[in-house]
Image 1 (cartoon, helix red, strand yellow):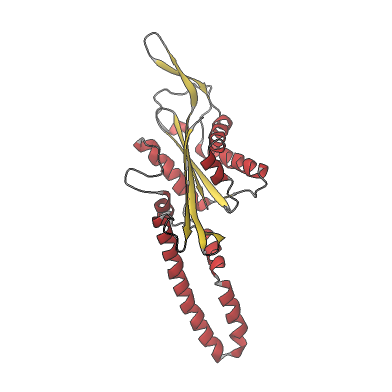
Image 2 (cartoon, helix red, strand yellow; image 1 turned 60 degrees about the vertical axis):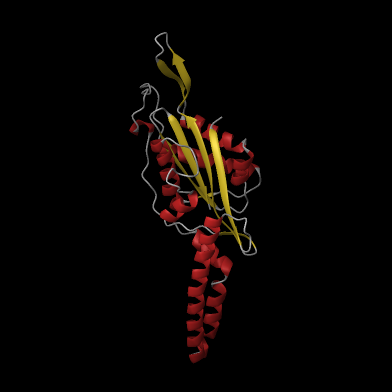
Length: 261
C-alpha cells in the first residue's frame, strides 16, 4: 500500500485547541468581511430611510449577508489551475519500456477523483465536486515533494496546506456548526509507477510490473480508505469539493495531494 498522510483544520470560536494558524486566518478574514459588510449594510440602511421604496431591498441585502451565506460564498472562490505533467516529462532513472503507456497527471487525478466519489456513494454521501481553484495548490505541493524529496504536509520552508490555499487565492470556510468552520483538509499519498525491481547478477536493477493509470489510482484510494484518518477525511459529510494533484520523480515515485473544501 502507498504511504499516506492526512490533516484537517477546524476553526471554532473560543476553542484554544483549534489549529491556530487556520483559525486565526479564518476568523480574521471573517471579522474583516463582516466589518466591511456591516458598514455596507449601514450605508444601505441610511439610503433606505431616504427612500422608503428601498426598505425591502435593504432588508433582503442584510439577510443575504448572514454568516453562513458569506462562508458558502467564500468557499466558492478559487485560484488558477496548473498545467499537467506526464511521467514522460520526468527523466526516469529507469526509462519505461516502449510498450508501456506514460501516466498523464490529469488522467490519474481524474481517476482518483472518480474513485473517491465511488467510496462516498457507498457511504451514502454526496459526491465531491471538482474544485478547479485548488488544483494549483494540490499539484504544486506534489511537485514540490517530488523535486525536493520529502513527503509531508509541511514543506521544508514551513509551508502548510493553509498557506498553500492562501497562495492560490483560495479561501475555504465550510460551516459545520454554530460559529464553527472547516477551513480545509489534505490527504497525501506516495506510490510507484511499477511494482518493484529485478536485480541482475551485476546488481543492476530493472523495474518490473509497470502499472496503468487505473492501477495507480486504485492503490492511492485503497490506501486512503484503509487508513482511519484518510478515510474520515474522504467521508466527511460537510466537504463539498476537492482537487487532486499528482507528480512524478526520477525514481518512479508518484506523489498525490488531495485538498478539500
